[in-house]
Image 1 (cartoon, helix red, strand yellow):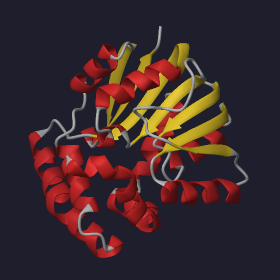
Image 2: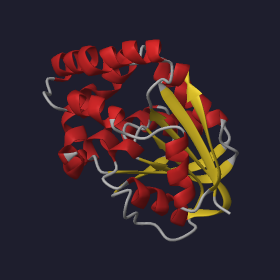
Image 3: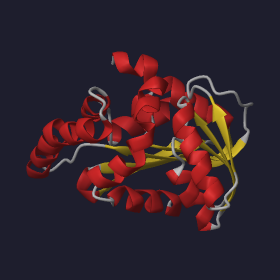
Image 4: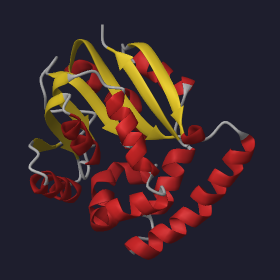
Length: 228
């Protein structure tokens, strides 16, 4: 998709309305998905949150008490500015780094865990991004990924597709005043891989024990894998 070449600018444009729209359009289920993501993680001293955005997953991790420190990476400075302010308001410390997930500015084996929520489908090159996650993760540690997906049940899938293709982009355009961002969101989910196909990409990147768990009837999917 052409938008992926300028994904940081796209999210800069909708940064101010992103959190509110996310919670409204997901009917607040995204909060539950993040809690499940944190629950699936083992305790870790230093976590890399790829595509940290406005830091909702980082906040959930730090509040859980099982994570010592978080470094976040993102291409959108405006999203990270909002995330930084949210962390400061809650007296939570996190580091925010501007950078590309496909060329991370970190050394090999730097982190005890890697996470990514709703970001992988925005990579220009998914395999390059997963290989970078593998590179910066310490051996024996886990990557935990949360992303949107399509339900397997045909009836639920029909209703979900209707919502995602027509209702969500319309509401998104009206509330964010951006004509393209939420149309892109629909397409980014519709043409992205999920389930078994995504776990194959994890395996191709070098991870082992790649597993997936559909959430909310398959609207989202949680992935875990280990670096040997």
